[in-house]
Amino acid sequence: MTDTPLLRLEKLACFRGGRLLFEGLDLVLQPGGAAIVTGPNGVGKSSLLRVVAGLLRAASGLVERAEAALADERAALDERLTLAQALGFWARLDGATAATGMEAMGIAPLASVPVRMLSTGQRKRAVLARVVASGSPLWLLDEPINGLDTEGAEQLMAAMIAHRASGGAVIAASHQPLALDGAQRLALG
Amino acid sequence: MTALVLRELRLAATGGHALLPLVFFLLVATLFPFAVGPDGPLLARTGGGALWMAALLSALLPVERLVEPDRTSGVLDQLAARGMSDEAVAIAKLAGHWLSFGPPLMLAAIPAAALMKLPRDVFARLELGLLIGTPGLAALTLMVAALTAGLRGTGALAGLLMLPLAVPILIFGAGLIERSGGAGALKLLGAVSLLLVAAAPFVAGTAFRAARD
Image (cartoon, rainbow over the protein chains, first blue to last red):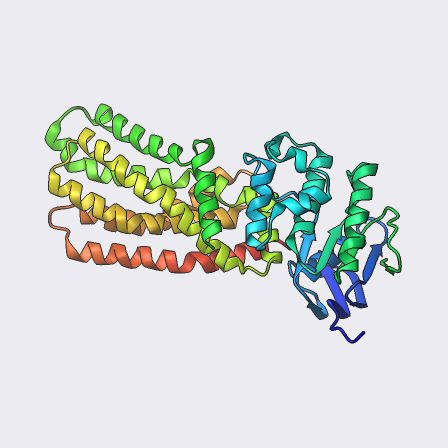
């Protein structure tokens, strides 16, 4: 395939808090590709995803990416709204509808529940549902399994498989084993 | 952009956040006559300045809710990850905040002016001053909110930062309501307000970025 890659990192280095987290990092993700970033706590997995998302500046190197959706540990949902309204706000910004993501992550029955009543796992599902619904070709997932039960993890796996089958790419940072077929492994630290 | 402005309005409307500055403003307007006594002419002479003080202090109240909740919950990061510039987010926040602060304050100034026994022409100049000055106050609130987001004891620090910077608005706003005041004060109030509004997106945007490191 001669598709343009969805993500290209070249000699990426990240410097934070007076410490060099990583350097000389290269990665290319083609459509359908996946990468799993592993490594001990504090080694810079989240920072790498934030650099890719454009939230942190790289000390040196190059990031080229398609439109990306980021899921991290913070929900970024308005507590007073119902789940459907809160996700709907982001879906409108993304030019999408929230329903697809909520179906995929099994939280459609919670649509009318206020965000402040949701449990940790349900929030995590909501964050992932936003990524699924966004329609972005590149998913950036920071510890996606954290807080999810077995069913939620299976739904996430199914969503990632469907996303890659439709030409998307996933980069996930996780210290838990993540079964992604044919994923590149990027061990930091 | 419109969605962000509407979101700001919704956040202000829920939980009575927009009401707080108004109630505070009216409370000051109610207490002031108790403090100086029910002397009509004295109230009419000092009331306008007191209302400007009240407006200034009530502009300080939303500092803690304007930026910090969006920073900690990751909303600012999610917007940035969508390629929206921090300056654009700040502009939306400024517009939304002013809409929930400026016009309601001008409405609250009607009963407040009655409590102060302000003559009609002074009242008209007070409203004109508020129309021109509240965007500047809203911009100042946003800047201070962005700069102090993530710090502890924001409330006290924000007051120390903001009130000195609001002095020009106070001077020209209060100058405008004096009978001899007039055009000069009006232009200078407009200039100060414009400067603050123009600077706010860049200051706040830079502060949003700095807070990520």
